[in-house]
Amino acid sequence: MSRVSVDFGGLQLKNPVLTASGTFGFGVEFMDYGDLRELGGLVAKGLSLRPREGNPSPRICETACGMLNAIGIQNPGVEVFLRDYLPRLPWRETAVVANLYACTVEEFGELAALLGAEEGVAALEVNVSCPNVSEGGAAFGQDPTMIRKVSESVKSRAGDKPVWVKLSPNVSDIAACAGAAAEGGADAVSLINTITGMAVDVRTRRPRLANVVGGLSGPAIKPVALRMVHQVRQALPDLPVVGIGGIATCEDVLEFILAGASAVQVGTVNFMRPDASFLLARGLEEEMDRLGVSNLEELRGSLRLPAPKISRR
Ligand SMILES: Cc1cc2nc3c(=O)[nH]c(=O)nc-3n(C[C@H](O)[C@H](O)[C@H](O)COP(=O)(O)O)c2cc1C
Image (cartoon, rainbow, N blue to C red):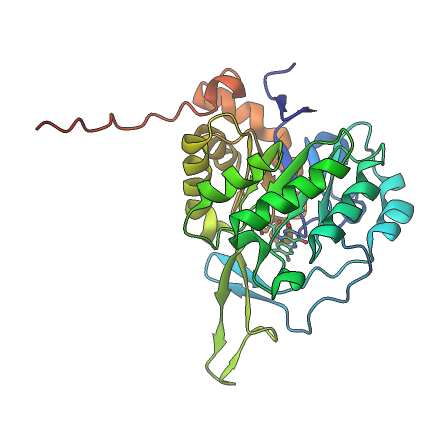
């Protein structure tokens, strides 16, 4: 173990810096910007059983301190990933995490069986942000019962692979959602996916996205993500958390670890600086030296909270 390696939920990573799904392609697209083996891991673009074209354009737009996207999980399907992309990734040296997207519990299970059988896949991350087509279209991720069912379905078919359930922040009780994932057998939760938002062009009087609404990401959402990591850590201290949301600097990485995250994912900043995740993985030890942090284990969850108020009658 080095001072930056992390070990949680049945997985060991050389450092806590992973890339976030949908912001780093399938990894091969970023090979000109750095050596993928420097990363703790990469989370591939969301995969469905069959290819998806995604939503009509425009499907991204810039906002203050962030961006909105409504890509709609465009992807070539799980088989193309396994045939054309996974063999090109250095999966023995860096953890390749597959991100699963489906609209029924059964489809999630099928995807888990296919990906769980692959030697090159280190863990499965389940995106529960999709509308649940077999139950009338309400988002899976907003219903703890459905989160538990999806987690069970994926875990039961994932073989020995760790399962991370990626939760939506568009809920009022994130700890209840994390608890449901843990009950379903999740080895960790990934927090957070994008926050639902909208942008308007006053000149054309149209929404900026063809889909009207989209998901907000980038530095604008970092405080929300930190708050949710903290709340889940407080409610479920034994459930590992992967922190995601607006991470752009080494200091951001350490903030999430202080709040209780075991690892982090780097997303929107990849669009500004395609080498950002490599820089963070490389720069972490120097930042730890600057802040007097000896190792990540010591930092994790050592947030100094105000003493609870004692009520006197
Ligand atoms: C363009 C784009 C595409 C995304 N696609 C996916 C996806 O396929 N699956 C998924 O779970 N999350 C997806 N996300 C969400 C990110 O993985 C991440 O959770 C979110 O953007 C917050 O992190 P950030 O602020 O660092 O970008 C996407 C985000 C963006 C910006």
